[in-house]
Structures are given as structure tokens and as C-alpha cells.
Amino acid sequence: MTTYKEINGTNIEAVSTDPANPVEGQVWYNTTDNVLKGLAKTTAGAWATGGNLNTGRADLGGAGATRDAALAFGGGPPPAPNAKAITESYNGTAWTEVADLNSQRASTAGAGTYTSAIASGGDQYSGVAESWNGSAWTNLANSPNTGHSQAGAGASNTNALFFGGSPHGGNAKTVYWNGSSWAALNDLNTARAGMAGAGKTYTAALGISGGNPGGSPLVESFNGTSWTEIADVNAGRDYGAGTGTTTSALFFGGEPSLTSTELWNGSSWTETTDLSTGRQAAANAGADNTNALYAGGPPALTATEEWTGAGAPVVQTFTDS
Image (tube, rainbow, N blue to C red):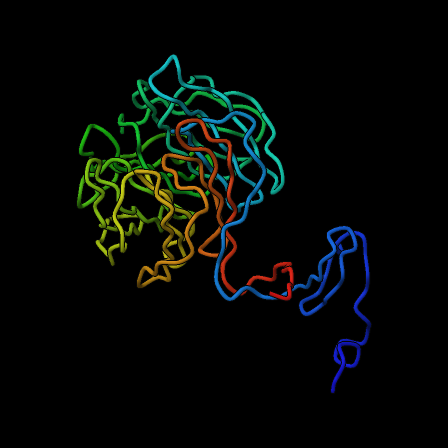
């Protein structure tokens, strides 16, 4: 019978802590945990617990290109002055408080990265917008879209798209910030509030579900000029979160405290592994349908979950059961 050493060239090591940089297929015995562990590829995506926010809150905005470099700002409960101006930055392990927003608010929309972001709108702050440069927020000209609970997409504080939002039932407005001014672009086909947004540039964005009240399954794709209806999500909902691109996106959470997660591959939505903690109106960030983060939520959650897609290497614990 072939042994582990013959296959891998080494014996199974006994170590007090997990190796810092294991390779796929490596197995070791952790003497502290008294378990056998190894690095293997996942067969399905999964949510894992991340570091807690320092201040629990709901209705907060988020930005970030990956789950390891994210920003969470504002939050509630609304309305002002009960809302927060707190901003926190995430490094993949822990949240750190950084400079506050200039206006405390809930239900603000975010776009960009953790060093270059935009916060637009918010409860009782019609059209108020701020730009983040990695260390401080700066007030901008007010957005032509004055609704709160908008959706956002975009690459940075010079390339940001915001669409939909209040009043109750939603508006169809789409606006673009180019770093110096706002421009009104073509409307959504269906007016909605509480949508999720995804996309790394204003020329390639998704507006997902929403429709407060009601949770429409509609999804629209934006090409920089106009919106086109594409395949519906399996479960429509309000105040869910979206991240990724127009060809690789993730849609998760939603009202009322849902755990549902769906993958987008550019042509269809597929239901996948649920969140551990159901929630809505929380901060989100991520790269695509293999990489996402969700933090906060009502009534004042601090919990953060990190999504890793199928095929990623993860440390697994082996048992005899």
C-alpha cells in the first residue's frame, strides 16, 4: 500500500500551530487542537466568520475591491441624529476605526475601494456625498439623486455610479461621479429602492432585486449608456447585498434577515451556501463570486462573514466520524 510519505515525500508532521504557508495536499497533526488537518480545495463555496466590527450597527454603507480590504461607514438605526458617522477599515482579520464621515447618516450607498471611495445619500441627507482618500472624508457637490437606500458600483472616488433609491417604491435615477462633477445618465427600466449593486466600473454594473416593498427578482445590467433586463434572481428581496462584476457576482442576505446566497456567472443565477447569520442592510465588499464580505446588520450586529468560492484552498479538519 502506498504511504503518505511515498506520495508527498515527507511524513505527517506533529506541530503545535498550523503551518503558515501549507501547500495543497499537505497534512499535519496539530498537537494543540489534537486533530489531524490538511489543505484541500473546497467543493462548494462557504461563508466563514471574520473579525467583528468595533461598533455594531445596521443600514451602513460599504466599499472594497476584496474581502481583505474593505470599508464600512455610517449606519443606524435611522433617522439622524441617531445615525452614526463611524468609519471602519478591514484588513482581512480585524476592523480598525478611522476618520468619521462629516455627516452622520444611515442608509448611505457606497462605491470604490477602502482607500478611494464615495458615500452618497442617506436618511435625511438628500443627495449629500463625500469622498474618501484613505485617511479622510471630503464633502462633494450634492448628487442629483436625492434618495436614500440607493445602490452603488464603481472603481474609485473618481468613477462611481449610484442608482435607484427612495421614495417608498423607488426611483429610477442613475447618476455618475467622475471625480469633479455629477452627470445624470439613463434611468433604470424599473424604479426600485433597496437594490443591491455590483460592478467595478460605471460602464459595467448590475442592479439586483430590491423594489421596497415587495422584493422584485428583476436584475438589470448597465453598459455605461443604458440598462438592460437580464436573468432574474431566484429569490427577490429588499436590502440584500451584491458584489463582483457583470460576469461574476454574488447576491446575499436581504429582508427579513435572510441567509440566501446566489452566484451569477454572466448568464444565470444559482443558489449556493447560505450565510450563517441572516441579515439585511449591512456593509459589503468583494472581488467577484469567489470573494465577498458582509458586516453588521440590524438591530446592531458586529458579526462579519467572509465568502470563499468553490475551488479555493482551505484548511480542513479530519475526524474519524
